[in-house]
Length: 434
Image (cartoon, rainbow, N blue to C red; front, side):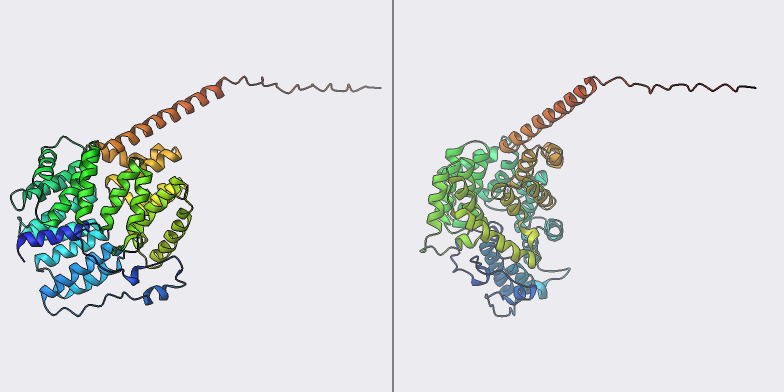
């Protein structure tokens, strides 16, 4: 496979959105009417995707990529296990670099970032200029909150692949930090004047540019690039979720509702609201608009989470569960617990936001110390995070001030004098002598 084609295939797997229009997968559908009664029922609900056993490495690579993409489109992690099993016969200490990169992608999707980095570093030790490994490494570093290392991996791509891929990689990382960026200016010009011809590079660059523009407050550019990316790959669930988050952040609830109605239309071939992330956002939009549908959506989400817990896969969706507890269940205590658990696994802007929001609602600024330290250490200047961190700091000062005042008032309360008990000395009776 030519290097550029292989790199574009990897982009497809990392970001879900090359426009594969598959039919819905009945194995990943849960319409809310079925809840498993036992673990045996879960195991017995077999995955319907049947592939012929791979007899060559090339067949295994193609089929593994298909399974990984299906797993992303359906939000069903069982596909990753199937992909791993397909690659197992070709996996060894001297495995083909493409096998290791795909294994790293599987591990990344399971949030096993140290193991994914180990796979990629072994590839790069043998092939320092492997663009697939460098791009995957940048994504893993970014997801685990190691932004300097992510930027370094992106910069190494400059001389190895298309300029737009390297630029979009740099911009994706720098959007978290919101630092002044030549890469962003260059990507801005490229997207508006000479966008890439191949669909995958174009979609990915438009998407990364949109996220970066929003973090810099350039909302018109962000909207323009989001819509272009959606035109290129209208059925990509992760991209749809990002666009909905943009509309929610800007309080454009009517626009979000119209978009959800369009992707839920019967004519669409996308998995749409089978995807938990989209269903979560529809419930949030519905609740903010006062629509009763959000309660039914919440019930379906809970049923799906029961299935995940029974399969031992609940940890893969901690971010979504924390957001659900915070925005739909009015349970900031549970949201904070879930958000902190999630923070131990992945550290992107969305993950930091949930911790700060939950701590703020609970008036427990100390619970967000780890995130505040990360913002400082990684020099993250994302506007939303900076705003939340500032509010938490003010809250902490107010709580400390209130605590000091309480102590002062308590010390100034006039206490009644302590009255010593009056002891009446008993007079001894004289001894009379006759």
